[in-house]
Image 1 (tube, helix red, strand yellow):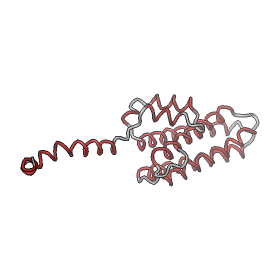
Image 2 (tube, one colour):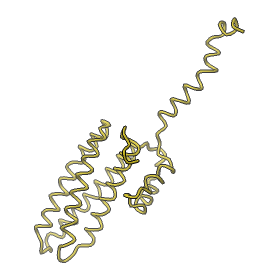
Image 3 (cartoon, helix red, strand yellow):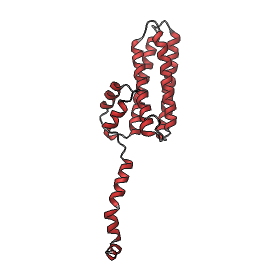
Image 4 (cartoon, helix red, strand yellow):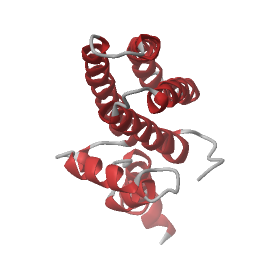
Length: 188
């Protein structure tokens, strides 16, 4: 038996060891988003479940995305929402009586759009802590604007609702960062 093993070392190595190498490497690189993981993300108490499920189910090829790809998609989607909201805010500027609130929100939304490229670069570099800082700052900007919009007369419900959607997208992105991308998972 020992003579057979010595003579056929590479054959034995291939039959016994190769399946372990292939399966372990597959496990390391198989980070595609699964339905179970979407359920975990969308049922976190700080995530708006209905928006989360609606959005993530609408992505045609979500099963082909890894968490980095999904996060990139969500950041770009959020940026489009910020851009659309900024355009709406600017449209209301001509009819608004509270121009200070409108100007404040315009500046906050413009800053958020400016940061999008920095967020995507940090994500590409896998600097998830930096992405977290930017998304948290974006969330704070949206909160400041929403606080002002809520007390504004007349109250602009469309802008408040859009602002909440942008904030809810931040929660989804932060959940993915924390639960699936960051090395340390303090909240998952």
